[in-house]
Amino acid sequence: MKKPKLAFISPVFLFPTDAGGKIRTTNILRGLKGGAFDITLLSPALAGQEKRWEASIKTVSDTFQAWPSQKLRPRLQRALDLFREIPVNVAADNTPSANQFLAQSLSDRTFDLVVFDFVHAAILKPKSLKKATVCFTHNVEAEIFGRHAQQATNPIMRRIWSSQHEKMLRFEGEALRTFNSVIAVSERDAQMMRDNYRLSDVFDIPTGVDLDFFHWQPSPLISPETPPTVIFTGSMNWDANIDGVKHFLDDVWPLVLQEIPEARFIVVGKNPPDFLVDRGSRLAGVSFTGFVDDVRPYVQNAHVFVIPLRIGGGTRIKAFEAMAMGCPMVSTAIGIEGLDIVPDEHFLLRDSADEQAEGIVMLLRNELMRESLSRNARNCVEAHFGHQVAAQAFEKICLNTVEKYRASGHARH
Image (cartoon, rainbow, N blue to C red):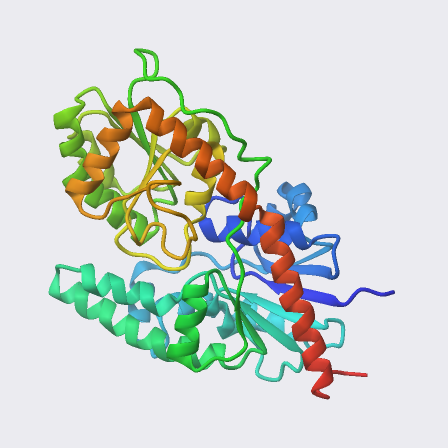
C-alpha cells in the first residue's frame, strides 16, 4: 500500500544539531523515518550545505528540497522589524525565497499532510493551501516574550519585550487556529493553548532523548585530575540562556566558590557573547568552550549539571540529555518546566540563587547523593522518554489528522 506523503517545513537548516529545537525536530523525524509516512523535508540551505550533510539528511527524510537561505540582514533592518505588526522572529522567517518556493512546492497534489515546525514558520503557510496541516510548537512563544518583559530591568527593553509579547499573543492565536492539529511538547503548553487561544485539536507529546547516543555512565569521582566541575550546555546566542548564565555568574557562582574555591564552571555552547565571556573571566574557575562537535565528554566528566533559567518556554531537551548521561542536575522550576520528573528523586529543584548554590555544594560534597540521582534519572528517561516514544505519539497524531481531514470531505479523491 502506498504511504501517505508528509511535507515537513523547517524554517532553518537542521544541521548541525546545535540547538534544542533542531535536536527535538531531528529526533522526531528520525523516529518517523521508515514508518507510516513518506517524508519530504523542506528547508532553507546555503550553497554546499545539502552536500555536506547529505548522510544526516537521509536519516530524517526520504526526500529533501531546499530554498536559498537568506543572508543575515543588516542590524538596522532587523531593528526596524520591531515596529512591524508581526513579531520579530516571525518577520525573520518571512522571506521572499521561502514564500515563493513553498507556494510552488505545496501547490500540487503530491502531499497528504503538511507539518510546519515552530509557530513562527506559519507565516510561510500559503493561504490557498488545501491539505491537512499540523503545527509543531516547541514553546508557547508569547510566554517567552512575556517572561523577558518581566525580567527586564531597563524600562526601554521592558517596553520592547512587552510590545513583542502582545504581537505574539495575537499572531500565535490567529496562526494556530488555521491548522487542523497542533502538537505541543508538554501537557502544560497544550492546556495554555486551549485556554489562551481557544484551540480544541491540540495534543501533547513527550520530550524524547536518544538513549543510545546519550549513554549512561556513573558520575566521576572528584580528584586532583577531575576537580569539582559544574556544567551548563546550550546555544549561547539564545536570550534565555544568556540571561540564565549571566544570573548564574553574578548571583550563584560566587556563593559556590565561597564554599569550594577549587570548583570549575564550564559553559558549553556556540556563540557566547563577549560581555558574558568577559564576566566569566573575572571569576575563578569559569570557562566557555564555544561550539563543540559533541557535548557528551563534557557532561560525562562533570559532577553537576545546572539549568539556572529564569526565562523560556516549552521543555528543555538538555535536561533529559543530562539525565540520560547520568549527570546529577540542579534546576530552577522554569528549567524543568513541563517535564514529568520528581524533585529530590531525579534532580534537585532550586530556584533562588542561595538555593541553587546550596544544592550544587551539597552534590559536590556528597558522592552517594550524586550516584543516587544519576541512576534514578537514567531509569526515568529509559522508562518514559526515549525518542521513539515521542516519535510514535507524533506519528499517531499526524495519521489521525489526515484521516479526519479526509473524512471532512476536503481532501482530494
